[in-house]
Image (cartoon, rainbow, N blue to C red; front, side, top):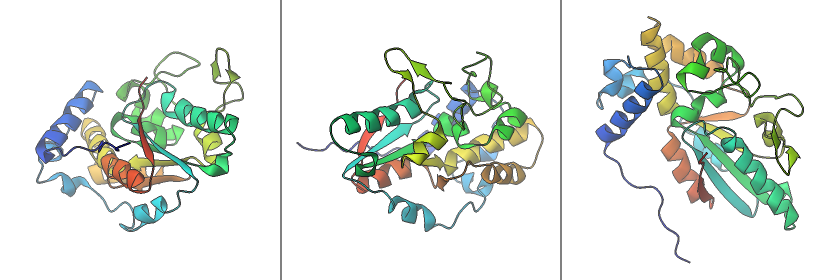
Length: 237
């Protein structure tokens, strides 16, 4: 079967305009002017990681059955439920977790799941990214998918499901987060709070959850995952 190319070229200005529109919809209506200029977006980007490290990270993908989940928005539980479903159904067909290579790309408005709860509280991520706490049904002030309590997530017919980021990592699931989106959203948050964009970006970087790899962009990561023989799955809620 012919494999379709799922990554289509996008004009840079159009891409940044899409980011800006999405950010406005999420409550960041005051994105810095510099962030919206295609020629100047790099001015807001701090040196997050060794440029070589993201490619080295992708070399760690193991297993015969490989898949990348492309999470572009919060999508309720699905950025975490689908990787668990992939692992469980592979087990039912005779393939253990060690036979599976699973990558989750957190990009665009799905990036808050990459951060510690202290950022959720300080920057009101629940309001900014429209994420409600499953327990309170109110805008979340914590990362609900990091070290969730036992029984926090249940699905009819399946019962309790282990879809915490830490639980998925224990079974070999790899998570990465888009640096381009972090740059734009942190700059917007900085302007709204009258803070220095570089300082806010640095704080966000320092608050990434253990084991989550920053990558130059989410679309870059989706491309790299497919180069490493991962099938593509878009996360829809």
